[in-house]
Length: 307
Image 1 (cartoon, rainbow, N blue to C red):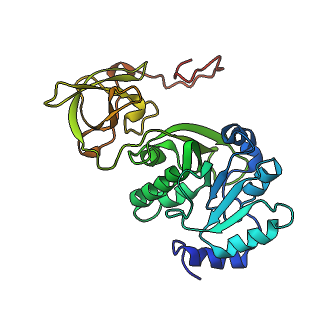
Image 2: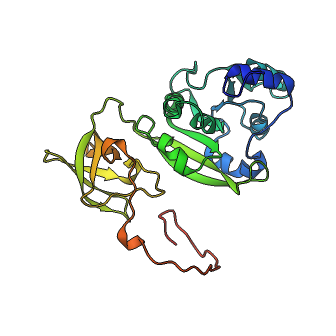
Image 3: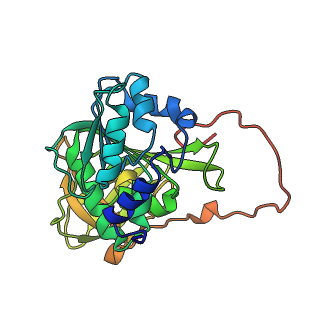
């Protein structure tokens, strides 16, 4: 039998020997309400990448989402799932395709969805290159206000570097999903990614110094080296693995120069020198902690990060 990582040959043989349905992670009932909120209207056109023999498209179809295009590199599983749903779910579409080079036209879908496809690419050879190519395809295929939903084993510390890379530049909401089966972790992660304004890959990297940054409000200003112009910077443009990326006054950085919708000069894809991710821990945040565990009840907590 071909080895895992041999692409379609491995999966064709595997599916030929086991034709029953199987979901690698996250049962539908455990994420149904969250998915429906993010998918929006039942009329949304959905691209399901790496569908395998998951029951997810069947379950979504039965809940009213009829326009789903399912893609997998294995022609065997596509034939199996097409035959399985031909009578009861005739509107489901099944396509053999490579996730990094899909055949659909630009801006064809309202939603792109995968379960563990990003996990697979992030753990394979040339992870950065393959993930960039895949997410570039996802971005190309989404409509202007489209959303990419990626369900993962991997946490933000290993996935945000791909999702917030300059060529994709997604606005990302991280959602923890409780689970009832799968691996030994307590939960999985759903990354809800909305399209932002992309940074051209050819944009020059400009050195600069952080003039000031308001961490509570999430924005600040950067003074470019040898240039009188200063750039507005929003925390979403900081390449970082921190949950709430921030900059410090006097920090030396690199960035791309851009403009927002109002014509204001802004910094995009802010990193340390040589593209190193920003990690910012303010001195006042480093405090002594007790070794005695305490229990309590959350009274309130806002998306602003306090409660």
